[in-house]
Structure formats: structure tokens, C-alpha cells
Image (cartoon, rainbow, N blue to C red):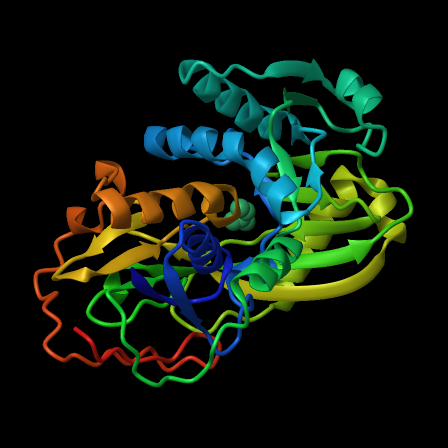
Amino acid sequence: MRVLVLGAGIIGLSCAEELLRRGHQVSVVDPAPGSGASYAAAGMLSPSSEVWHTERDLLRLGLSSIELWPSYAGRLGVHLHRTGTLLVGFDRGDLQHVERQAALLESFGAAPEMLTGSAARRLEPTLSPRATGAALLSEDHSVDPRSVVEALLSRVGRARDDPEPRECDVTVVATGARLPEPWSSLVRGVRGEILRAHTDDPPTRTIRGWVHGEPLYVVPRADGGVVIGATAEEHDADPVVTLGGVARLLDSARLLVPGLDRATFIEACARDRPGTPDNVPLVGPAPGRDDVILAAGFFRHGVLLAPLAAQLVADHLETGHLDPALDPRRFDVAAARVDADRLVHAPSGREPTYRKDNA
Ligand code: GLY
């Protein structure tokens, strides 16, 4: 097949790479590859710590995808940080969050090991002595999404930025938080602000949890880098870094991992997570157009789900197989008739601009 992939974030690129591996002709279009949510993402591969009540499908998908990550990372030549995740409560109220999450995971058959504050600190000495307790998620790892994007780009080839029409059999839309019409309402932006720093004394594993009610994660890289995130705000403006967001992240991070006080600040950035109405991704035919496949709406789970998304998209194109939970047609986009052959993307500088003439 001749496949046009719109969007060179981690989802678009992973789909493109899988399709190339399977012998299809693939073109990728994006004026600024890897500069959307993938650029901000911390890269937690943590199916267990980011699911919430009713999100059984997300946990199922996450558990399938994390299985793929060791060989995926090996194939791409990127480092997989395999030291697990500590889900920590700072005060007693925060510990209730941890206990609720542990109970939820137990109900999914994935009970974590519970640790007292001092046991957690023995395991992770960078943790504050004030932490009240933790759950050890020993199978939840992390990866650097920027390295993944770089590795994928080197395999896929340069993504084009010209909006010229081209011949293709099918278009895969992977444009993150901004989908073209008539599907734009299927995805909303949920702003996340995130910080990067460098420290000589990084945690050995991802530490995430709650600090006086604020959710937080600190994700270490192999080179002493740490990623501190993330705020979450429903909004309809361009994602910007706010002083309030930075202050909340720093306050929480320095309480939970006090040594971060001495870390060197590197970067703050903000991007929109692509959330769907039910926060479950969209993978399958776009409402109203069978020759357009959506690979979108990965919300907080894009990095974790990238290898699975690639397989699902390629399998769908080759066999028609579809995971009903992800079928974009579960949403009623009643007016989802694309009357024009030409699709013109949303007017954001960071998102792909394109048109398609072979409908
Ligand atoms: N997956 C982490 C976040 O969305 O902040």
C-alpha cells in the first residue's frame, strides 16, 4: 500500500516505521517532527500508575504494549530504564491516594507491593524521610521519548514539510492534539507543563505520587537528567508554561526528593496531551471516511502505547482487524462527511499542514 502518515510524533513515526518494515510505501508529512507532545513527554512506561476507575481498556492496552517495549527499544537502539516505579504518598492524605490506586490495581489482578515510608526510603534513598508510604510497581519502566523519536526518524527518513498533494491508498492521521476537520472535536488539548533538570544524585527509579494533593512524577534518565512533571489543565488556548505551574512542580518535587534542590535547571516546556471524550485512543477508520485512519487521542499514554499503536494500525490496514474499544466511530460525529477532497489542517504553527487529493 501507499500510505501517507500525517504527523511525525511518536505515534505517527511508530506507525510509519512498522508499515515500512512490512513492505509498504510510506510518506510522512510534518513541518516540525517530534515537536508536539512527544517532545514534552517524560516517557513513563507505566500502565499501572496512570489508570483510574473504569479505565480497564487502557490498562489492558498498556499491559499489552509494555510487553512490546523491551524488543522495541532493543530494535531502535534506545535505552530502557528498567528499575520500576515507586508510587509515593507524601502526607497521610496522599497515602490514601496510593492505597486507592493499589486497591484498584488489585481489582485488575495486578496488586503492587506496599511499603512503609522507611522501607521505601531504604529502597530509594533520594526520597524524603517525610514520605508516609509507597507502592512498588516493579514492572513500570521509562524511556526517553526524544531518543525514540530520533531513532524512528532515522529509520523512517526525513519527514516532509511540503503540503503538496500526493498519491496514496490510505492516510493515517496522527496529528496529536489537533485533528483536522471534521474530526477536531474528537480530541481536546489537556495542557501539561514539565521541567527538565540535571543532578549528580538522581533517583534510581521513577518516583511518582502525590504531595499535599498535587500529583507529581520525577523520572530519571541514565545520564543524571531528571524530568519533573506534570501539570494537567483543560484549556483551549496554546499551551504555555506558567509561573504557577512551574512553582507547583518545583514545590512538590523538592519536598518529595529534597536533593533536587541542588539540581541544575535545564528546561521548562508545555504541550497539549490529546484527550478524547472517554480518554481512550482513536485507532481505526475516521468517521465518514474509510480511506482515512485515525491514530490519535493517546492522551497520557502515547509513549507507552506507541509500539502497540503501530501494530494495530498496520494490522488494520492489512487485515481490517479493529479493537472495538478504540474504533473512532464509537463517537457520533454526525456531520463527519468530508465534502472536500482537500483537508487543510488547523492553524497552529506546530501542527502539520497538509492536504490530500486522492480521495
Ligand atoms: N503520561 C504522563 C503525563 O501525561 O503527564
